[in-house]
Image 1 (cartoon, rainbow, N blue to C red):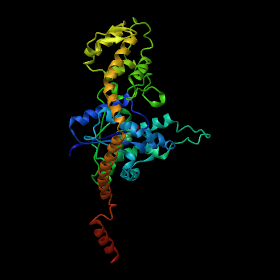
Image 2: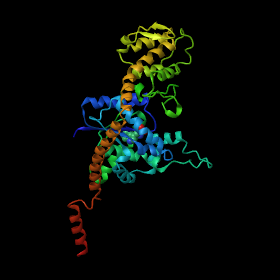
Image 3: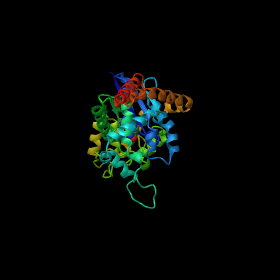
Image 4: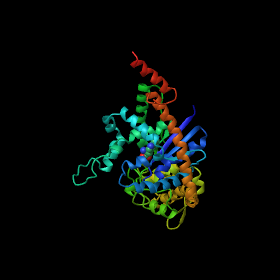
Length: 381
Ligand code: TRP
């Protein structure tokens, strides 16, 4: 059997460059590698609702934003099936059966669930705030994520590092199901980004994660002007006060972004920088730039100007494609409608296999006759 990819994103905002280097860029490469028999990319609106129950409109609005980001980043509907999670109702049925294979205690130990509960303040027991408490659907979302992955018989799940506990939990569910009911589900593997800087791109403020609520994101759909404003304001090395001072590259966000985005050809392409005026920027590799920064004599504005050029080199073609697609919204919804139809057929096939293994397929052809014979025999004694 060929290899199959399933991955996706919650539609709670536009996608940012952390999503891009953490998974989107890789998906496009995998899509074009020809090594995968099927590729499913899911807009996880149902999962987004697990902590946005009172804000369904936000989720609804962002489905198209994420779809536009996908297509403009290079996902090709001819090669990858892009679909909306809530339109595949088979996923909820699988989740219902998997719920019985997981304990509350195991979910409580899931590090991502723990961290997210903390981050969202669900555990704060503020009596006056009737929003306090963890929604059951949110608490159980790792189980629904196992349904997403197994429904499409995914062998490979390309995700960011924060999703590792989800894949681990899925693997446990697969193991348990196959042990109890017989070999049915495909055991998935996680695929992490190969570049350390891409595992978790920090926000422009240097904080651990790019996140909309922290306001430290550069979006794929940001204009060149917006990107430059954000790059100029980026966190660097607080000890690098004078251009002549030696600087640190570790923990310096500008260098982390360069590690994630810079390609060898950028050094030939960008031999000038803009720091109020044009100045030459003659380096042949990122190592050379780093060495000069560490030795002293390379200003923050220089490296920010170079980073800005590097970022825009990646973002400009994405932006251009987005502008074209924004003029053709009916096409984007047609991609999603068709994709959801294909996804549904695939999930239905897995659900049928699951029900066969659990022997809850009472009315399948052939099964009913055998069932009648079995039960009749019991009562004719
Ligand atoms: N939890 C993922 C995120 O927050 C989105 C997601 C839902 C997903 N189902 C998935 C990712 C299945 C990979 C596989 O980004």
